[in-house]
Amino acid sequence: MTQSVVIATRESRLALWQAEHVRELLQQRLGLSAELLGMTTRGDQILDRSLAKVGGKGLFVKELEAALEAGHAQLAVHSLKDVPMDLPEGFELAAVLEREDPRDAFVSNLHADIRALPQGASVGTSSLRRVVQLMALRPDLRLQPLRGNLDTRLKKLDSGEYAAIVLAAAGLKRLGLAGRIRACFETAQMLPCAGQGALGIECRSDAASLNSQLSRLTHRPTWLAVQAERCVSRELGGSCSVPLAAHATWSGGVLELRAVLGHSQDLSAPLLRGMSRGAVSDDAQALAMGRSVAQALREQGADAYLALALA
Image 1 (cartoon, one colour):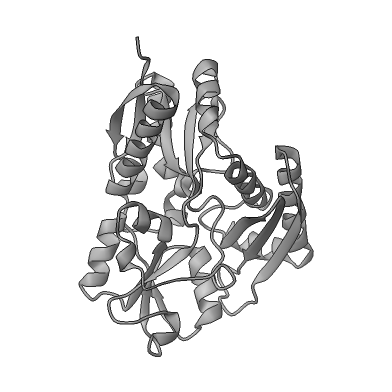
Image 2 (image 1 turned 180 degrees about the vertical axis):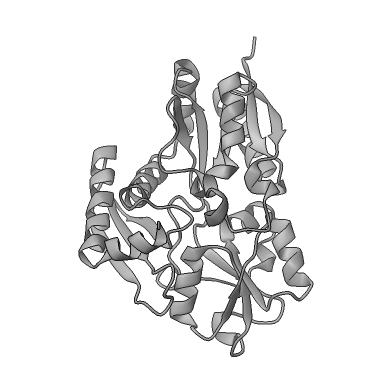
């Protein structure tokens, strides 16, 4: 008899695509059947305020964790960038899937890329990480808040509220909307946030048999890269109120981890940058690389930036 599980997921079109993708992998690679439990989270409901002001990205996962705790579902699928660096006691990441394009996408109906925007053009994003990096590239732009799911954001662009918006390339590509991308920011221009482009599967820690099965879905290079990225954020207390980017890339067996930290209140303040490069073959080495990059940022004055962001 085929084992069956329930997947807790947000109900946005992108979240449902991601959950369906995991359901197919469960069937194809593990022989597990699954059904979806769609849920609306507080992060989906509160659209008039930035995440930093209402509790951070954890608002996208708490209701799903409650479903796991109550036994209504056995696993939850998340965009890893939305998962807090420290999970509540009793939960763990059972698997991280191979990463899609991690870059940020420039989306506009009128302009080819950020350089083509006219002086003072309005650009929509509610990510502080993107704000500080956009200001470093084009300090003349008017950066305006943009919340809602992917389709809602695109509709706001199409209605003329913005000259351009910045979105994760991965979500657009997963939904067959790659044609909306006018240009992708290279990581030297706009460093992604920790985990961007990767999907994580969360389970209860006491579900040992299921966790062992799910671990077979993990893409090991992605797992090690995001471990290093998330460690930088964890060491620096990263949250939606901290404009922090961390991204790791592989070249052969060598991992290069870079991080950028901006000032949350003074957008003219210089960006702090850290980098480490070396052989990484296990979790301990990935975490050590993350700690070393976080320390490099601290040596440049990160604590002063963080004190204001977290005040």
